[in-house]
Image (cartoon, rainbow, N blue to C red; front, side):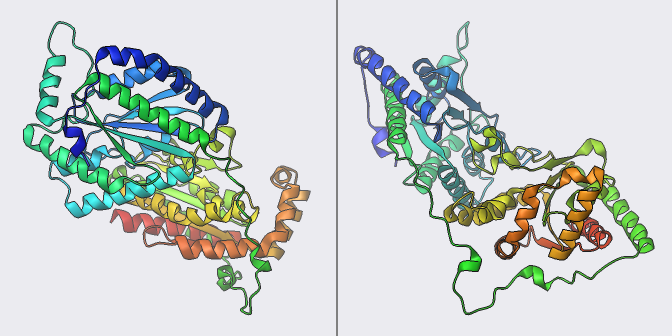
Amino acid sequence: MFESATFAHHLDKAAFKAMEPSLREDLLTAQFQLIEQKRRSLIVLIHGPDGAGKGAVLNRLYGWLDVRKLQTLTFDMPCARDDRPAMWKYWRELPPFGQIGIMLGSWYHAPLCKRALDEMKRGDFMAALEDIQRFEAMLHAEGVSLLKIWLYLDPEEARTRLKGVTKGEWQRPVVREWEELKGSGPRKRLLAISEDAARATSTETSPWHVVPAADEEYRDAMAGSLLLEKLRSLAAEPEPAPQPLAPNPTQLPSTLPTFSILSTLDLSKSLDEDDYDRQLAQEQSRITRLTNSPRFADAGLVVAFEGSDAAGKSSTIMRLRRALDPRHFRVHPIAAPTDEERARPYLWRFWRHIPTHGRTAIFDRSWYGRVLVERVERLCGPDDWGRAYGEINDFEAQLSAANYVVVKFWLAISPQEQARRFEERETVAYKRFKLTPEDWRNREKWPLYEAAVTEMVDRTSTRIAPWTLVESEDKRYGRVKVLKTIADRLEQALG
């Protein structure tokens, strides 16, 4: 894939100066189209050996584009894992629709570095590239386009150039991406490994572009031309047609009875007050002990609550809060997305709240809204919510791989109990704020939610992040079951 870049490519300074004004004007025009349309964002990944001119290309693009809608996304990238999942740092920096981000050091860095240092087996390396492919496919489907550039320069030439720019009284800042690779051996291996990675992760929507970097003018002109071509292709994309809405499950002709996994629950389970007080205190004590243990300092806890309206999520979260150090947890109530959140992939607003190790995040409703309320209310099409099951499984797998315990609950009650609780809310002043006309309307869609919950559990209950269905007709029983499940999962994970 790098073969043609090994040959000499040259553009003399006069020719470069002659073409630069029109290239710059065209880039600005194309950038303004991206800004006006606000249908997509664009991330430009710039990789290559140290000394190939990554910083110089970035500075050139900054000189050509409107910097008000341009972000530099840079990451200090040690091979060692930090105190959050590896992809967290990239997710939180995703630019909103209409903007361009130029990234130095990307999600390719860690696997390339570890493989070049022989710290990662080939099978693990290829698995990491497959994860990257799925991540990039999701970004594209969610409105984030990629322009992936590899600046090619012979390793020895790159080493010579790197020495040259760091000599003298004034040392020009140099982008050093591969400082961990000491000596010529690892740097030569990096070149071969990078070619394998580029070949494996070049897709129709996110191909790699190899830019010969020996000649500075040619390098910069080609990088600018690739960016212009990408921006024009984004501007030429037709407006996305609305996805046809799938018929409601109750409208599907079938000779088979509809199955609901929630119908298997025994909602008559209950606890008397004495047993409740004793068991609640016991499970809260276990959670306190486990989250304060030294072993939890290298782990994290993510708890997602879903359930029927008035099923008791808030009161259960209150009992969980009392077991946690208030300095080390946050509760994130999830409502309709804001404009800021709509301008990015839907998982962005959850990734940004993933805590550091030693802390807990509690989500009062969660990323499962994509396959629940957005599906039932037809806020997205079947392609979007159908794709989300795999994306959510990947998200939770990344949390688990980073030593987070992911605990997910569906709190279930009967329609009759829900109606009783709604009526109680109408009569109790301090509960009235919880009830809206939409809550009553949602009762009409009970069968649709049951179908969505059944498919959600079938497709996203995994060994590392299983669903726990909670019988919450009796709030006391439901609260104890939730806290006991969290304590059991923590105990199992921490040993």
